[in-house]
Length: 337
Image (cartoon, rainbow, N blue to C red; front, side, top):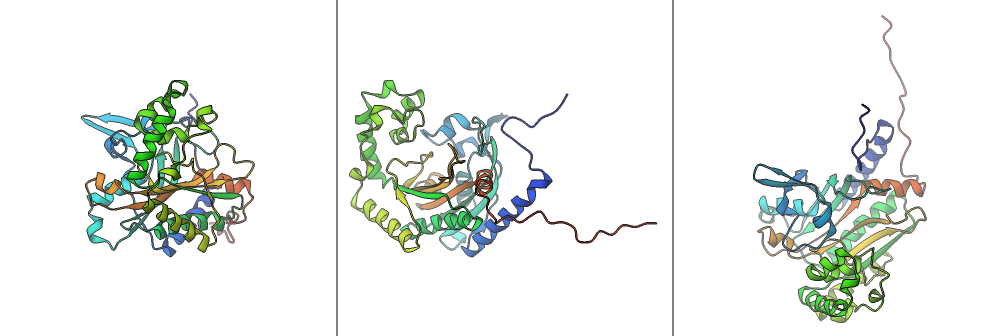
């Protein structure tokens, strides 16, 4: 019998791993410059860490690797933020660290989805979490760190997309507007969208199946339902990016794939011809209720995650000169007796 890696997994061979070392060294050096400290959480967690309340995301509903051990339901981590926040609360870092707590992680994640170029069932992810201070400049710094990383590697064909989901009041009003807009069309949409309509109608805007449906063409805009506070917050984020010379586009249909985001959300995508459907390089946003959900105080956070396999693919497509050739031996000593 010829043994093979499971579908959606792969080996990183000695002829390739030196590029990973260079990329990880850059990540760690950049996190040191931005004063982020590394955190390492378990590869599996209690399922409830990821499956929270009425979550509408595809990741929670369709892609998690969950298994039963005695009476415990455990899940291989599909993303990094939830485990970091669980650790932040469990270890009471909010009482022992200077705020904001600036944490980063590097490690494998697991999602049961259809494997394709740049998307595996076991993949490696780098992410940061800035926890404890709600300030537009923290959002700006978060985007700037990721942007600096990909530019240092040498990616040129990139675009920064941002949007705001507003505060709780804004989103509640907008969700009602979306339910009203889609109520006569929901039966024409895909099965996932029918579920999203009840759970979180914001996620309808992120559907890859129904994005050309006529009801998507004249969908209400979130900016019409933002509170004044939310408008000012987003304006400050945009002005901060402009001050740093980071070009961006406002995409009012950008909602991100996880339900815990509030206010700023963003994606940095590749515009290179080889990117195809897997064009997102890194993405993230602000979350206000996650620390409190895990039993901690009312604290806001902001972060992003970047898939390292996809980053390497984009670097290869653009022939980035950041990666040096694999080092060779200068001297080899052999005993003859």
